[in-house]
Length: 429
Image (tube, rainbow, N blue to C red):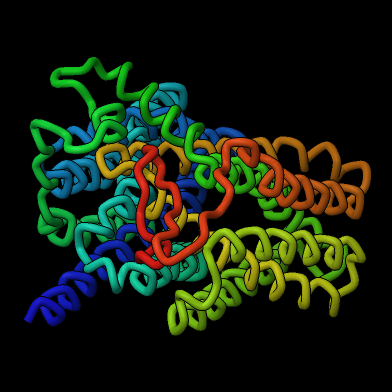
């Protein structure tokens, strides 16, 4: 009975996550097209989705604190999703009725609700499934991101072409609203014990009525103090710099090698499809490899794909897109698995949203770097992107190693957790 109930809850969770994330991926291109139609300026049109992204990155840690403090995090997520969908409608209504600066300001105000669609939602997964099914559920959850990356932009273009960009924005908001019921139904947070039973647990428990700034600091400390979390976070952020550079270079590769700038989107779609396929395979045997090993290996694979793309030859570009997706999909799954494994339960929401914010910052930095580099040399920009992947792999190998404990041996061997407690070596990770 518990297994059947867990299966229904997971399907409900995944359905809501997929709808929200497809809507999110659809909203950016749809807003860009709507802004272009309303203002006639590409730079002004791009300012609105950029404002949403930047403020989402800045507001992620704060949203994580609120999520961790909430006794009913699902209801907070539902409120944030509803607010985000409403904000899209308001942005659409104001594009041609208010100065663009006012619309951008509205985007800045709405952006902090964005983490509800990504890290905030994923942080609730351990409350939906049993410990034994978490590894597979985590792979399935990561697949919703791959699905959204594949379907969202294409759906935005299709709807905008058939019915206009405003309808595409409205459709994105409607998809996000489909996730309201699954979010509302997420389990409540377990009550914290009044008296921790272990000294290490006492050290990490939040004191009653702690100020928000104290919780913000605690979330960053949790990432810094857990070696595996620190490694995974550092490597993923550095890797995102290279990924952001590749996304920026895609239309330029299309123009240079594939017959048109628009054909560069095929590279991104191919990478998203490959990521979805790779995670589908990974979901069948989620415990075949440790997530730390998967994350490092996947980062190296993405770097190899970027080296291949630097040749700018069409067959090599097709292979590079497939390899990049085959690395990026499992890389995200492994990152989530490490966070679920090593984040303190009472700080999990903040660890996920802070990590997502840092990754968004990495993407933005990569996008900013790629523009001037690609103008001078497109292969040079791609080689630089590959260098960032190499740096990510090196950082994963080096960060936090001095704080790692040597592995224990024997039947009672244990491995450290994020808060200093121990677990049996054969316990689910």
